[in-house]
Length: 318
Image 1 (tube, one colour):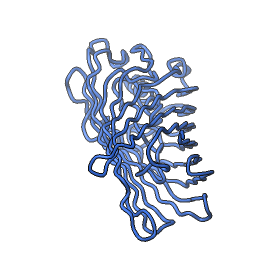
Image 2 (cartoon, rainbow, N blue to C red; image 1 turned 90 degrees about the vertical axis):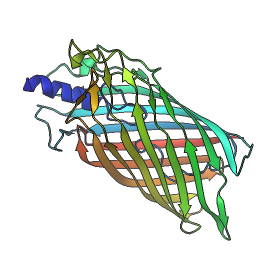
Image 3 (cartoon, rainbow, N blue to C red; image 1 turned 180 degrees about the vertical axis):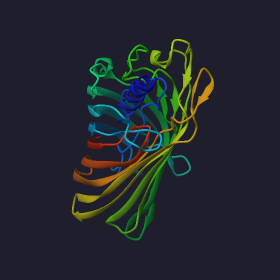
Image 4 (spheres, one colour; image 1 turned 135 degrees about the vertical axis):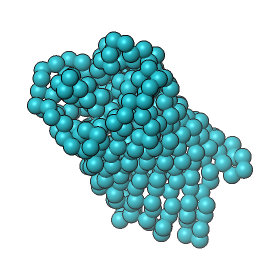
């Protein structure tokens, strides 16, 4: 029983390593934004119009924690995933009560996913491919201006995660989750000085029932439902030279309800983690921006604890 539980734990944990683009199984939290957005998150850099963004991410971990935050007893705990997501955003020039409507569409993908528990069979259960599509209508408020420029900007988005990604209930790790989720958020940026900002993005996650649950949960399992969660991205940066900003970025996740199997709560499986690290942003112009963010995780519960590197390029389609 202990050997079986260790295998199930590794399957569950490896499936939830990344943010938007991580493979996921039916019992785990779906693809969520952990660290993908950071500096100046509260406002688009060039106003209304179309934006195309490409993200690339590498995640590695050699530690997987249990519910108490202790390292699980497995011969190996190696996880390496390279993935990304492609995003298209449209903000309308139409303004209603100081706010612009818009739409956000994100397609995640997993290029490579490798997990190894030292027992020889976990990596065979991993697969690559496209993840679940994220669609979010939003309202973007015009920035509050001060004598030296913007002082505050904010956005509200009702994000929906559709189960369109590759999903196989016989696989421990799939790019898709197999169920619907809603993950609305509030993003904002405050200018402490014309060169120094603080940004945040606060999410609430709710997940629907999966009626084709992962088979490793047991032959008698007919449904599963991931728990609800709160998660946030935080960042602060300073413009050291025209176009160049450096700062700190972090994220935080806490699952607030238990997962369910056949409608019954399963205790001791709630996920938690936080991370912090350095970041930089270079603006080639008002329409082109390159960001790099590194995150070092800590205090993980029921998930891996590792390092995440994110490279992001934003282009305003004029």
